[in-house]
Amino acid sequence: MTRLSKEQINLFEQAIYLPLLLIVLERDTTIIKDSSIKLKEPYLALIDQVMRKIQLQLKQIKLDMKKQQMKLHKLKQDESFTMYAFLFNGYEEHHNYFNPRIRNRVNELLMQYIVKAEDSPTNEK
Image (tube, rainbow, N blue to C red):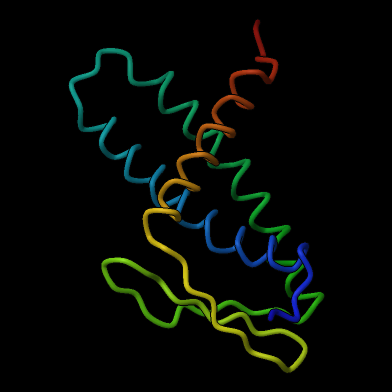
C-alpha cells in the first residue's frame, strides 16, 4: 500500500516520462539532421517547439517536487522492468515499471505534445 496521493504519484511519473521523452526527441533531431529529407526545417522546428514545452513542464515538476521534498532515483533496470525509488516525507517506496509500458506512455505523451503543437497558433508574417 502506498502512502502517496494520486497527485504525488503523477509528479513522480512525470519526472520519469518527460526526461525520456526529451531523449527520444533529441535522437530524432539528430536522425532528421543526418537524413536525406529535403525540407528538414519544419520537422526540426516542430520538435524544437515540443521540446521547449516539455522542458518548461519538467522544470515546474521539479520545482513542485522540491517544494514537497520529493526525490526520484532510478535503482535498477533489466530487459523487462525498471525500478525507481520514490523518496518523500522521510519515506521511501520502490516502484517497478514494465519497460514496454514506459515506452507506450512516452509514445502517448509524444502524440499529445505534437497534437498540441499543431493546434497552437503560428506566427505568420
